[in-house]
Each structure stands twice: as structure tokens, then as C-alpha cells.
Amino acid sequence: MYKSGFVTVIGRPNVGKSTLLNKVIGEKISIISDKPQTTRNQIQLVYTEDDSQIVFIDTPGMQNPRNKLGEYMLKISRSTLEEVDIVTYIVDESLSIGAMDTKIIEELKEISTPIVLVINKIDKLSKEEVETLKDKYREMNMFKDVVAISALEETNIDEYIGALKNLLEEGPQYFPDDMITDKPERFIVSEIIREKALLNLEEEIPHGIYVSIGKIRGREKKDLIDVEATIHCERESHKGIIIGKKGSMIKKIGTAARKDIENLLGSKVNLQLWVKVEKNWREKEKKVKFFGYN
Image 1: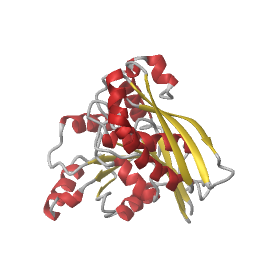
Image 2 (image 1 turned 180 degrees about the vertical axis):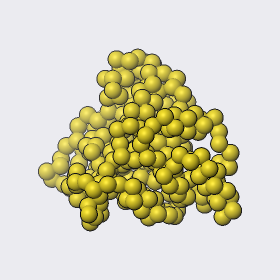
Image 3 (image 1 turned 45 degrees about the vertical axis):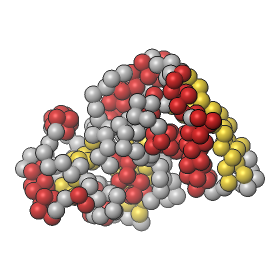
Image 4 (image 1 turned 60 degrees about the horizontal axis):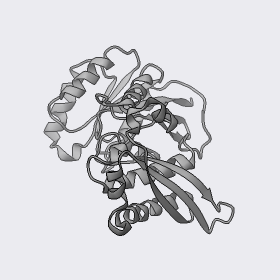
């Protein structure tokens, strides 16, 4: 019997949602950093085996919104809960349940979708602490399964996949065997550049960054591809920091991004980056929608 279905992945920022899904898929599709708002869009990642296909939906971390972009991200995270076959709720190694997780758990009590709870980052815990945490969540009587993993060290990933397959029903293959995401190359390229900005820039700047792709040329030659991209930021002062002294920061971002883009496209890449100010764009509903967050 061939099984298939859609699984949304939710949790607080920085609990390891994107790291887990990249490990499951075996490719880097969702970007990763230690800053909130790293994942902004809903991204579908496709995991296919001979007997099953699981379509994962990576969502922004659930948090209290502070602007129009934040409102969009929260709406995206919530919207999938009743529309999928399974919800995966990821928590980290914290031994106590914090305010945001308590809020998420209360929301999950209102849905009818089966929920698998994943405790991530168990490499930071003792075996006794892992069992204590598992018991704490099992006692809530709201999860179909509780799985403890380390996404970073790829511990118990197979156990997690097995838990999902046990809950999935018979269904069709929705996507071709070789398809791993519903997002086009241009989106993934822009996300790679944004990730490198997140990793290298000061704390207050990355939240206000959006990356647009101008042109990707030379695909027919395959020996060198030209990629033109613009990093949009919210303030003139931020623009100077992104560029850096004598262009040092934008060169650092570009060098790191180019390596990942070359791996994605399978070719040498000539990456050209520009920086443009879009003043307070996250506060403006029209601009948030214009940048694709709708």
C-alpha cells in the first residue's frame, strides 16, 4: 500500500524546524540561522520513498507579531494546522515549558489534526532528561507520538519518519520522484543570499532585509551563470553596514552565498549584489505584499 500526505512543521523560532527538514530531504532548501524570522514563507519539501511520499510544509516560527510582516508570518504558521494530514510540533531541549510553547500547545488543543511532537537537540541532554521530557509531553494526552531527535547530529530521524508513515493513510504520489521542493530556483537563490546576510550582519539589521533576484543568465552554457540580486534594507545607515568598509561586508556575504548557489545550480556563478533602501517596508502592507508575503 502506497502512503502519502501533507505534514506541517511548527514551533517557536530557533527550535530546528529547517535543520530537521534539510536533513530529511538531504538538500539545503530551507535557510538556517540563530535569528528569529529566518523562515518567512511557507515552503514545501518533498520526501519520496518506494512506498510513500511525505510533503513537508516548513513554516515561519510562531511568535507575537510586531509589524505587518510578522502578522503575515503568524497567519501562515496557523493557516496550515487544519489543512494537512499531520502536524509536527517541534520543541527544543528546554526542561521547562515556556510562555510561547504554552500558547502554542493551547492552540493545538483546538485542532482535530493528528499531532506528532518532536523533541529536538537531545544531544544537549542526558538520557534521563530525555525520558523525563518525553513523559512530560505524553502526560498531556494530545500527541499521537513523541519522538526525541537531534537534527544536527541526525539522531533518530528515521524514527521520526516512521512515526509519520504509521499515521499516514493510503494515497497517491503527488510529485515526481526527483522533485524536492515547490519553490523555483530564483526563490532558493534569494534565500541563500538572505541567509548569508543573517549570519554576518548585526542583530537589528537582518530582520529588515529582503532579497530580490534580477536576472539569472547563461543557463544554456552551464560553464558560467550570471546572477544579479538586490538586498533591500530599511534604513540608509543599514545600507552602509551591509556594504561595509570599502565593500568588505557585501563581498563577504557574496562570497559565502556564491558557494551555495554554485552547489544548487551545478555551475560556476558570477554573483553581483546591490543594496537598496526601502524605508520601513515591513510596516507597510502594500510593500509586504509586493515582496511576495501574501
